[in-house]
Length: 439
Image (cartoon, helix red, strand yellow):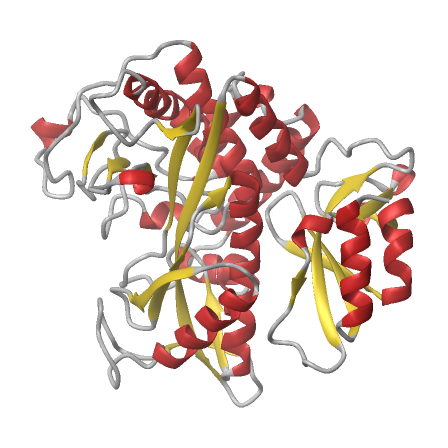
């Protein structure tokens, strides 16, 4: 038994823990969990806790359906929104077969493997996310409506901004979970909010995003509201993005920090690698038909370009200093599975370094106001989910990150979504039914 496991077992005994949640994500980034009692935790560490994989989308069929959850001791979190007497703790889990072999389609494990490859080549990626969401009112039965919590706009204050108290509650809970909040504010759309928290290593960043989404939805529900991370829940208002900030360390130094340093060329090649593969991997960054209603509008990019500071670009280099120097990818949204998204982005960037790809010239113009002549030679992101599917189908690169069966199952599911979307005349209604309460 490892020291970390012994510490966890002792913590559970000493801190009135009554329920333990073992959490994982399906192939699409939806969190699942099973609760066990404290006396079962030691066995879970040694033998795992079984579950029916055939009931989880993309995991398996009934013929060979047993899988095991092994809690990761390093991910212990007390859930602060649960009672303080009879506490509830949560672990993220590794998924294994009955033979205790790694389950190939565990997206958390997929990210772990990519990070290991990255580190073997001398690089360590760090990631921070900026996650936007809407708050909607609920009806007398507690069901979500399409009426926004307020009519506030960007950086508005109370009383116009009615989300101030909920954001405060979320930030305090994040702190209790060991996730350091950095800022929170009202976003551009009515009822739209953003909370940013500290960056971390890639695996923790993905875990933290899953925790954050769960926390936001829980606190919204406690306040009689519904939180939606749908990319564009309101047809006439701003969409909600998931900006992904990436920095890369080599020899304990952030290579994005100093453009005059000889290592900065690796940062440029990393960016170039992502630009080179972005069309192929967009399906896994923008995974819904609704995602493509956001791109090209309201500060969401459409063209495959980069620039410094410019928010109309796909990738921008923020005006930051020291360890905060980074690249920011502005196209993704919360329909993605962060483990898969981060894995693909890191691998694409490392490929750029390995191939010594040269970064193209920046486009220092406002692409939202650009004329046809200014953009005629620019490549664009896929225009819809179907285009994204076709790009992924033809990608050899994706196969270097994801198992073929994962790719097949993922694409088959997205084709079904596309068919459902196309079968309904009212497209906005179709997307509400597909995604509003799902994300």
